[in-house]
Image 1 (tube, helix red, strand yellow):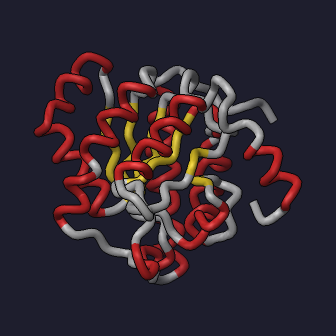
Image 2 (cartoon, rainbow, N blue to C red):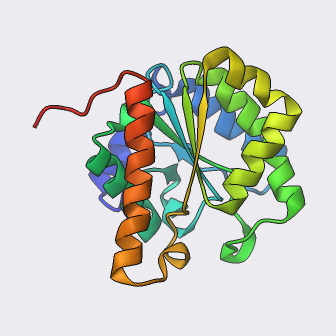
Length: 209
């Protein structure tokens, strides 16, 4: 996203059918909190094709681009992009989302219980829009807490209707990867395995190489 040509190209596509409803949702959420900012979803993702939701904590420094994107210039985006590539998951089959869709003040990295609770309604709306979703990969503690809160608020019915599977894995943030090289590789492999299983359940195959 640091490349102006790529950024401008993606910006020109935010009203395309593949992401228009996601763009509208992000803008609505932003309007609900005057003065806030909710990054848009990179148009490489496709709401009609998506089978997997990648749920993370909140917009980080990389979303200064104005997008949630695998092409953002931060370690979190780079790590998730590497997981997708290793699993063979094409971006159009997934949607990145945040527990708390609004940017945190002062670059915060933790959520309050009220902020997690605030993420329930946006997640409900996302799941309605991304109607083919069959898996949610919850990255980190806050993501797990939101999924549980969403389930209690009616999400279980959606899970039952669609056969959605919830995967609980590590956050992709640097602070969650503090450890030996062996541990880091094991955590990465766990993420890849979760996405690979989600793909298999949805009947998705990695692209031929």
